[in-house]
Amino acid sequence: MTPDTRVNQLQKRQEINVLGQMMNMELTVNSLIDHAARYHGDAEIVSIGTDGNPSRSDWATVSERSRQLASALRTAGYVQGDRCATICWNNVGHLECYLGISGGGMVCHTINPRLFPEQLVYVINNAQDKVIFFDKTFLPIVSNIRDRLETVEKFVLMSEPDEEIAVQFPGLLFYEEFLQRGTPNANWPEIAENQASSLCYTSGTTGNPKGVLYSHRSTVLHALVAAQPDALNLSARDVVMPVVPMFHVNAWGVPYITAMVGAKLVLPGPGLDGQSLVKLIDSESVTIALGVPTIWQGLLSALDELGSSAQSLKRTVIGGSACPPSMMSEFRGKYGVEVVHAWGMTETSPIGTVNALLSKHNTLSEEGRNKIRESQGRPPYGVQLKIVGEDGHQLPEDGIAQGNLRIRGHWVVADYFGVEPNQTLEEDGWFETGDVASINDDGFMTIRDRSKDIIKSGGEWISTVELEGIAMGHSAINEAAVVAASHDKWDERPILLAVKIPDANITEEELLAHYQGKVAKWQIPDRAIFVEGLPRNATGKVLKNKLRSEYGEVLVNKPAS
Image (cartoon, rainbow, N blue to C red):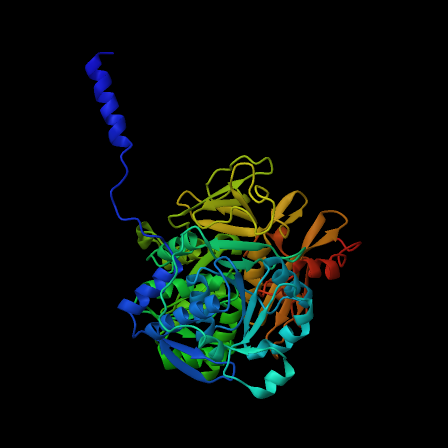
């Protein structure tokens, strides 16, 4: 090597090591509300209170009150990193807590009020919450567990002062009075983007809930990507109604995304029945709504009852569990509403995949495109997926092979809150989701089942998700769940637990006949059992462990023909 060559190589290395010369601004939650207030300050925020009455605000007002809340918390002695809990519906007060707590450098811990009292006590004590902000609806819950909370110093009711309630709950503070302790439009504190911004606990069916501690950086990056056209596709021209609760995975990031894009926001409060939602969609010209399948079942029924065509509604994002194909068809065929399938978890902030068709799919028939729409979609930039076998080795992405789904990315959990480090991820550094899935060569991922729910009959796998979707396609069925039952010959076989729509007249034989030609004969459930309702956890997911416990022996000594 000549001296000149060495000099040239040294110069190249020096050039490579030069840092980019761009501004470095922290990615923080308070930057989102600052943007919304400055450039979309008059965009409306419609909020339904616990009394059912609507109120109207805007991003400028929410910004001012969020800053005042952050200032009030500092005045009360709380410092960056302190956890402040909320037990609230989707309303403007909860939005102010979202932004004011995190924007002030504290951690907004959203609590699901549907947890059992023991779980509520556990998550509050585990998080070491210092303050609880709660809606009037949840006063009995908070009163019941108050004496068991180890670290909570202040209880703040989200209302104006109420002397009668104050007598019932000694030491209670009222939100509007507490807010006055702060300075309106106070300056935000300096926050590093890797500081914690919010905390949400899983609602697993076994063991204690686990905390997932999001950072400002992960939250902003998630919002940036989730707003994109091939994700949730939100803009300042949208009117967005998150029906998914703000106490569940940060309402899928919608409060942050809508602040980022400056969209009008419609917060439906406690009234999540179909008729209430239809009236809000029509009165506020909602263009996109987001929620779980059970919510949209009620909405479709209410549209019929009220004679509404939901004219303004263009899209609905469905997650939480697989959307029955029949529901997708009804939304699209009858109302012209695009159904966007998505998948994620508390541990993934939650966006993991969103179903957006590719340009090459334009040449497909409508039936072909609908088949693709039934999958949970493709990962956006920022996350990666893979499927692995029982031996941990990666499986092919051919749309056929199915295995354990793993994920990694910029907004995926690294360690559970309060758990010993390096105990959460697999040895390869990926997060094990607990889902069984397949991925095709375009990256479209299809959830086949939860690993604990998939049925293995005579050595062959049967997807409960597929069987449930077929059952839901019958006009007489309102809800369905498929679980494994023990079998003398095949080890286990599928059985269907079905909830009829009111006044429906259908027999077990008729419902099982509905499967003919839709799946292989050996995959058809051995029994269809009609039940009054399905047990659900705090986020509305069916508790299949309870169903297996109750119905798991119905086939013993009764082999299928």
